[in-house]
Image (cartoon, rainbow, N blue to C red):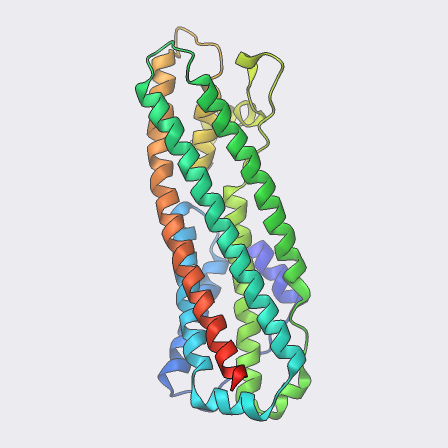
Length: 302
């Protein structure tokens, strides 16, 4: 997580600022949430629980930003010091964040539904039956589609890199300058969290072979070795990808079809719980992003 964060922070240095009225509950709460998100960025792990914490924490950060925007002092400063370029940049950034969050939520939902269909098919199947092949191929296709969606989202994140420039004229008002700096930092943190989240979701390319029963991904070849060496390094999606692809391998005496199906079912069950948590976190974040954007639009319209 730190790699993306440090690059962004170096490229877009955010000057340390403080509010004139540090005792106000809204500003104190915001600074506390920012510190939490900075600590999150510095963490080394990116497992499902950590990512959920990041999503819900980011939603809380935007709730604090909305409270900051609704402060009379903030609204007065915005009314007295109009800067169309900065305002348009902020609106553009908030819209892109909404699109990114919404698209990611839709991708997770689609993948969850496909995984559940496969789970249902596996439960109905018996060891040795071939009817699950269509469902397995459907899951693999869904993962490939997810890879494309994630690539588009990561490209969108990169385009957002330079939305916020420097606006020295905002320094005429200390409070407004502090608000602008915090909004810029929040945008960088948002990009960092989404980059980590999307990287977690991104699969290795599943490469079909000519024979339908040789539809084995690169991930299986690498993942099986990884599982032997250090299975703990694989996340829930990795485990399902390996288990599902293993279903297409020729069975052996040590590795019966029934055992492979049971392994896939166990991993799919764990993955379903992860998708549920991700969905809740993304939905919560989407609402917070939307409310913050609406608050800013309302302020500008007065």
